[in-house]
Image (cartoon, rainbow, N blue to C red):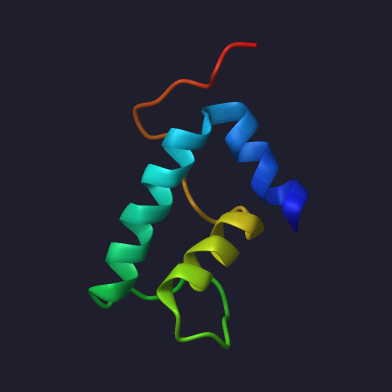
Length: 67
């Protein structure tokens, strides 16, 4: 699962990934449905699981970090 979390951070930058996760946690707290099946009622864990499964849209207005 760590590899699935490292890839977006390498491609888009950790600040962008953190921002996307915070936004998603807020959406979940406001009642948005989860994008994956989850046993957890913790919106933070659910958001991380969605990121790890590739269900979160990482593109937004940000371009990938150039290496």
